[in-house]
Length: 394
Image 1 (spheres, rainbow, N blue to C red):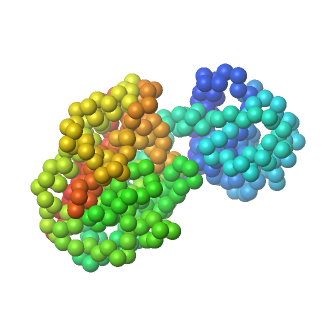
Image 2 (image 1 turned 90 degrees about the vertical axis):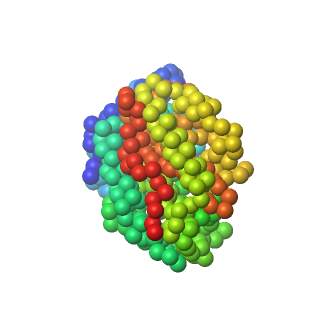
Image 3 (image 1 turned 45 degrees about the vertical axis):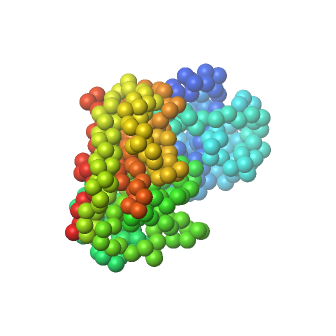
């Protein structure tokens, strides 16, 4: 289960190349965020990866050094009890140090500055994210495995879990058990320290409840202190729309998929037509996911082709809408690039996107779809299946 040493070498080479391109005068990069550590070293142990432009990279591990050595093919892993140990070998860093400024807490920054004596820090977040955005064949193989689990569970298994009177939390826990038994790693990860077990699960209008996450859908939540999973009070009844928007991960790599179900009887015809238009938008975006395409251009061309009536409340419900059609995905659910304004670098083969056109409908809930697609010369290749959703469960 180790990340191959060839993968680690290629990732480091790509990072150095990107830093040379974006910051020609860089001298030192220091990485401590756990997902970036996993990406570059193959282990998630607590430590500091020091990358010298004119020298080798060293992974200094605080805890657990023994586990890092057992798990990782990284060529130079050394033990430290504090940054003092690494600084004693590396020396003071007088040049600006490039850090993950989006994720390094101020207390940690202070400790690093104390021992390494640098006076200025600059950001490397964009460079690390850009390198991670292009997946190797090894990474794609893991996402394909995640996507196969995702497709099987949401398209084949969920209908048997839907029983009249079940509440949202019970469905979530039943679904979690099935997902893990099928191979899901048991956790999904987002940027900015966020982790959860599955995602958003809702019956009817629960799926458009406003939430604190930048996503088209919503969830009622267990309690104001834990606004996730669903509600114990909301019971499934005939005529309900069921919305399941969850991630699935294998060895760190994740796919994202939303599937909808009509329980007991069909939805109103108008809601079905809106759903079908969302599926058409997904297919249109997927067809444009080719190397060289510009994400902001894809977004503009698709949005310009939609009617003002359809755009009213599109990608959310009411005032709670988001300004994208899809997002990069990999070790985080929410990676770059994003199919949105402001993302102007061309797509590359090997990038992977979750495309999720959705629209909330009053008294019905969130219709639409989401699947994960790999960029290819022929357009997006779905890793999570092709079912158009609104699966009838009568």
